[in-house]
Each structure stands twice: as C-alpha cells, then as structure tokens.
Length: 218
Image 1 (cartoon, rainbow, N blue to C red):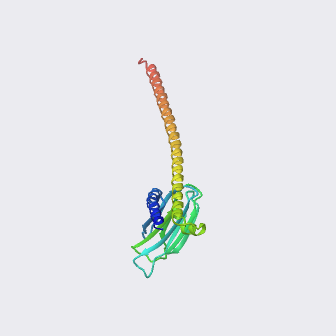
Image 2: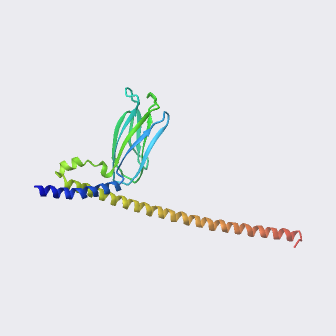
Image 3: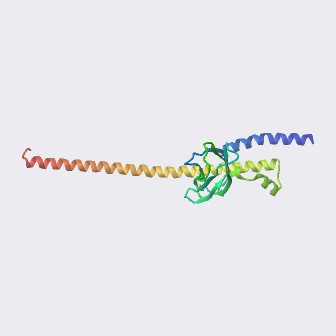
C-alpha cells in the first residue's frame, strides 16, 4: 500500500505541473472589475472562435449595502445578435455557445430609476472554453477521479490550445489575403495616379505650345 501511494504521488506531481503549464497557456477565464459612471455605458469584449462555451457571472458591488443600485446588461454577438438582456438587476448570469467567430461584447449601465452612486462597480467572472466546463458533473457522470480526471482535463486543455492555434492560423491567413488585396489596390491607384499626372502634364505642354505658336513666340 505504501508503494502505491508513492507511485501515485510520483505520477500526480509532474502531471499537475504539466496541467498548470498547459492551463496557463489557454485564455480560459478572467475576473473583471468595471466602475460604472452615472450616465454612461461600460463594455467588455473578447474575441472568441465559434463553437466555444461562454459562461459569466456578474454582481453589483457598492458601498451602500442596504440599497444596491440596479443595472441593465446586454450581450451581443459579432453580428449584433442579442444573446442576453436584463434590466433592473443586481446580479445575474449568462451562458451561450458561440455560433460565429469574432468579438463578443457585454455592456453594463445604471438604470435611470436607480439611486446614483459614485462607488458602483461590477464584478464579472468571465469564463470560456475549458474553464466553463463543469468537471465535477463530468466526474460524477463518467465515474472518473484522480489521475484519470486530471488526464481528462489535460486532454481538454490540449484540444483547446490546438483549436486556438488553428483559429489564429486561419485569422492570419485571412489578414494576409486582405493585406495583399489592399497592397494590390494601392499599387493600381498609384499607377493610375501616375498615368493621370503624366496625361495632365502632356496636355499642359500641348496647350502651352499652341499658345506660344498662336502668339508667334516660337
């Protein structure tokens, strides 16, 4: 039994270090603080690829604990689709699976009927991808624990890194195509501008030549 415990500890120690390193390489979750002004909107955004789970909890924090001001929340997709909209709330949660790649925006503002306060903040716990997965439910459902569960987490983190690298590669290819197209258009515009300048100069020379010939100066 002692040898079994030692072998498990020897396996879990490097595995945990590797998991922490892989986990830190993936942009999975972030705690965000927003200070809300009295008459303005504050937004947070993140560029996310498609088919990624997003989970976020938000809560209003103020010095006036007896009467928390309420806020309105709106979350939109890159194409402007409304994913979450709540009014007159002090806390809430939104969750969705992305259908398109791009910037997902969450905006917060104080309700007009709320008692204004200069010390109103919102704490947002924003999780994406593997961080939004409920590993406790997975462990109970598939009856796994210990090393097997850590390996499953490690596998999910590696898959997330791979998908993120493919997304970045596709984005780089798209940006390269756009850049090459822009450079080609700029080159054609330069050629056309040069041709127009040469044409205008030639017309000016002809006009001056005819003018001098008419005045019998040449």
